[in-house]
Image (cartoon, rainbow, N blue to C red; front, side, top):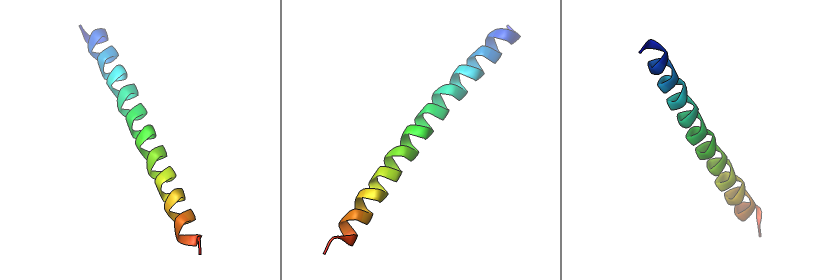
Length: 41
């Protein structure tokens, strides 16, 4: 029971971390795109 719970927590952590990393990556891409647009004359 304890090991199952630990496994579920680890799986949840991996999923959350994956979502957060994807979210941060898309935000960075958006910022780069906006910066390029702002620098264009």
